Image (cartoon, rainbow, N blue to C red; front, side, top):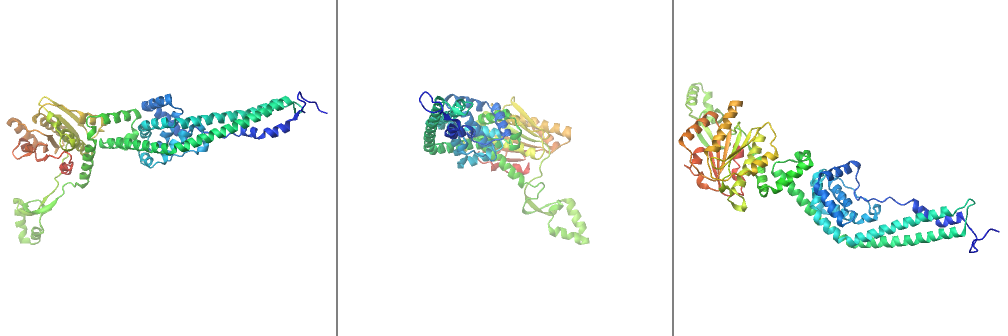
Length: 542
């Protein structure tokens, strides 16, 4: 007979105990892998996040702030960034997630599945800066969402702790069984009792874990509508912010390719400058000007005859009417044709259309006297309209591979010149300096026009280029001396430049007999400062 223990029970066999503890042993050995990230990402995408995080003070500050009040928020920010950045974001199944990250998973799922996210994703896919900006734009919505999800998160944390306890209890069963075995494969009664207690504890922990997980799932299900609404709101705000910044960049002539090549911190500084610039509120006007100018360039044909409006006399053989050409077929009339040609008396088609474009520099003289602060329709100032027109002329020059010069003027002692050579990039910082500078004071025509003439003389002497174009944008009328006028006319005849005048908000300055009218080959008055098409013909003839 075998020995009995202190309670009189026979010692248990190891195999019998192992059979009773089997499912706990398998549970301990086969715990599924749980993930803390909702978005599946490869190593390179993770590196992109780390690099972006290191470069973005805004992301680091947001992560610090959220971590002080909520759990696992850095993981949430990573998921939000990767969802925006990845071209085809793929989310893990809920069953794969660590229980403590169920709220994060639901937030990202709701975000990605919202209609607003599709619009946001078009702007952010493949662009780390735009993805980071999208996360920052969602900051306020994420704070509210995390605050409203506190109870759900606590339930998830309890489920996590219960799961950990159940896994620990399952491991304890195996440890108790291992300690209970002797060399002969029998287990003393006291050790068998310890194994049994471990099994009972494991069963209780499993039941508690199941109950806790069920409670967490119910709480999350109840919170889903609110999370979805908050996620949609967050995506909509982020899409609007990213879209506005992209439009701002386009308005200032910064293309997507240039942005992609720009270092993160430089792009962030540029975006901040554009948002806070004195002219930021007129970005839409600047964008419309540039779009209009691009359309006019597409219509322009150099040396085109234009619209036929009648018959005139001259010696332009390209416009001779057919009846005159018919005379060349009669030998007796050829001498008559030659005589009329020499006298400029051939009958020609008269046309009204574009003039031959210039080849020298395009120079925009922009009045920045105090009166240019005056607002017109829609709150647009005279300065804003003039600067927007000048920036479109800068584009015109770049497109035609011509030098551009922006001359800001006011009183005779106030002048600032910004040169943009055709063979050098037109840096955005230099462009912004030109757009933001305002001199104040009165108005003098002679000082800026003299500077423009000297620049064209320099260009002629250095590169033998003639036929430049000067655009005078002003809202004032002032006198010039006779001596200055004679020198101006001599230079104009020598260099062959043209002068276009734009009287902004002051029609009398554009009237016949005005000083501006006498100085310009082509002059128009602008009263509606919301209308960019009033200057459309400039971009066909320049």
